[in-house]
Image (cartoon, rainbow, N blue to C red):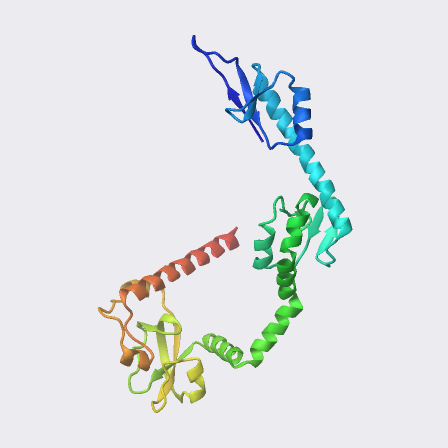
Length: 297
């Protein structure tokens, strides 16, 4: 539906001042329109109604707003009937003035709900409100919504975590997490990294080695550190994150590291690697300053 001004002025103007109204054809809608606008005339050329008068545009806009409200009320009534006849039985739906949808947080659920016309998030109720006029759309999307909601339930998440923990991939992930907390990294015993200088590693980016131990790295850690090769002796090196000042002072390598450098566990970082590390270090510094300011206040 729409209404627009159709004003003509000047000596050659032939049509009176007025506005046009266009809306999808419906016999009852046309009857209501003709009752309110008896002077309106249909224009085959414009495929719309012309209403004469200086206030025609304002009157048409008010009528269109009332019609939209009337159509919404009618659509809500039809949606209520459809729900009463064939309801969606689910613990995630509650019936109120409209339909309230509450599910565990899930990006897949949000994607489906955002495709439903007139659905909106209610912050106070912590639920999605879906008017009954959108019931058929909700029904079409519901299988995917309910499946995603079940998938996001705390018990389902816990079960998947336990299954991942049992699997080889889960064990490897646990080992990687534990290794990062230990701040250690295998380095080739016959080609040790410089202590106190920023170097690049495959797992942790650009770091500073603080020391090495004589403890040999066993073969089981090859799942965490792919550079560890059978037949070579690796020992543990301890590391810390490089500071922004250290990264700025580090001279970049002219060429990317090759197989030999990767297999020993460390190499001189390239300019591209240093840029990434410097950006991350700046971000960490900003977060620290922000926390410090909040603590002071």
